[in-house]
Length: 427
Image (cartoon, rainbow, N blue to C red; front, side):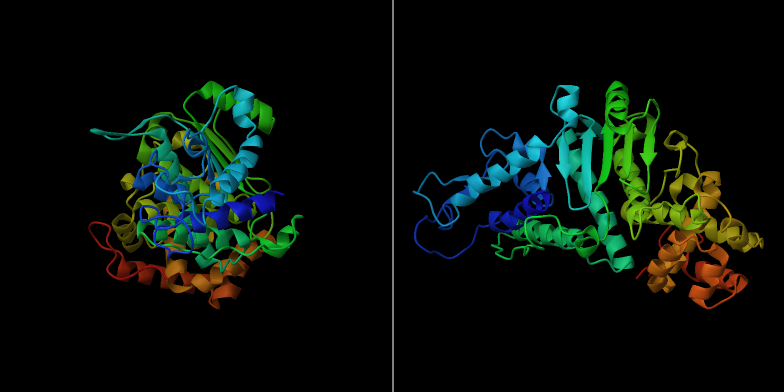
């Protein structure tokens, strides 16, 4: 049934972008002869945001459209799309019934579901700059877009084609169509009968990634005890099987940029831990890959990396303000120490931030020059293959030769000042 609900939520969104279709029978000019118009309780920016996700509890609470994002055109007696309002509302109601966290806390919590993530961003209004604050609902949608962008990039790099990647692509096109004032009729075909298909038959991941952030640390502690069976009062992250992440807004995580970077970084850890098989390799010989990738996608989306891979409370640790290209080029030029033999032995949690920055650079090198090896490396690490042997066999070079190629590429592409690459450093 959940598979059917997700299908309906995605397919309906394509019809919900209707603004320019040709006439059939009823309708009028105001509604482009569809019988429905976008709900005016949501501005154009929010309509675009809502069409990029499968469900949003804030939209579902709208008194005018109840999450349909459409209302009847008041100038006509309806048209070919009028039935979509009640259909979408029913799908939204079915989704809201399963929302257990708010029921536990005894209040509504802001929830968004995307093809890859189930997010709670319960921060309220946050500071973006000294002169600007952003509503918590908007923050949640920005976070949703960020983590889905991580999933999109991971999908490209690891050649993923599961149903969740297809759903994400369809939602992006639906949002783009609405922004362009176009009508998009394409829908996602059902993956099978109403019963759930075997996970391996349709999906790249075994689970949705659950990520929560709370304004009140007591709420964090309460849901930890209820849903995660943990009495810990600190930040919580479980990787591999059914990944989940929970934290509250403190220190660097109490601003819009801080929350967005935090989710982007940890979304990478979660996705890769659940890909191919439910196993986190950060403490099994894959720390260099785990840390390097998390920093890389954070850096790619936000143009810097300020998170520390394990203890989020140590995010105040600094390595050149999170802007790394020039410092790493100078470091590798000055220091002839062979880093890869050491880094390949380190677990994620044992690395200092400078070592994680080196892992970021090495992953940067792989994306730019050997992106086709990423799926092979990740699968090998999950099969607990020894990192040094796996890397040399996959790249067809001895480890010292790989390091020399990495160092030469850094010298050729990283600047001595600033952070703009001298040439494209990704594929």
